[in-house]
Length: 215
Image (cartoon, rainbow, N blue to C red):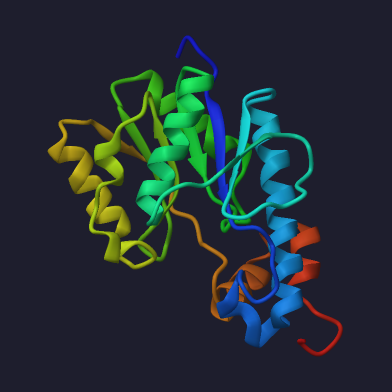
């Protein structure tokens, strides 16, 4: 690839009661907000390793995020529209490939982003990082492509997202490539599995081991 990719992070602002709600039985609303803030900060550091000066953070609400990325506001009625619009804005201001990631995969590392960029140097048009829940934690694109986000809006957040996105890409004549699967951090079961396998960064492991009762 002749041009360094931009890294675009899609994130929800860490507002108590509005983020990581399935983890509230474990952490409480305030603990979930602290976890989300920690996930955003870690993902920003990761993006900076791979694409210094080409990092973007797309937020659903205003948030005083660490100033290591250019911040934009998510626009669109469903997740597919918000991702499509964010990619188009980034490419409009910084032409070149885009690696779009979320903040929900705490075992994501720079090597995964670099592997996606490497896929795009070959004959792959769209690179996906599969999540164990049936979604994807990364999508890499040479250029904006609305077709890959044009799946049934009812599927977003469910177990068929990756399959539907691959089908949409194939229908558009795009060549796809896959990275290794990783686990999202969405539920208490996810939290227990990630804590048990010892792969969590310590700063996030601490946020998943509350010392006080959930609030």
